[in-house]
Image (cartoon, rainbow, N blue to C red):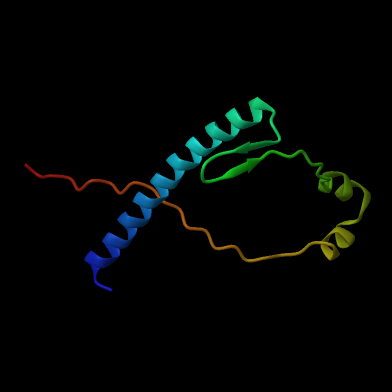
Length: 97
């Protein structure tokens, strides 16, 4: 890929990421509105939105580390490789007068 293609790829990624961030914000606002209604089901012309309540259990790793030895905690630990893409604005080139 040429430098121009790489720059276009980075810019396109940043544009899409920003658009998704805005849409996620709007989606959260709508979800909050739906939750506030308290209805189990809302039927639209193109979609049916359902609201349900469930319970989730979490594992208190801080407490487990107090109970288990470091070796026991390490034996129970899974390690995974995670790829992350971050976006930040590029600095504008300085113009020399």
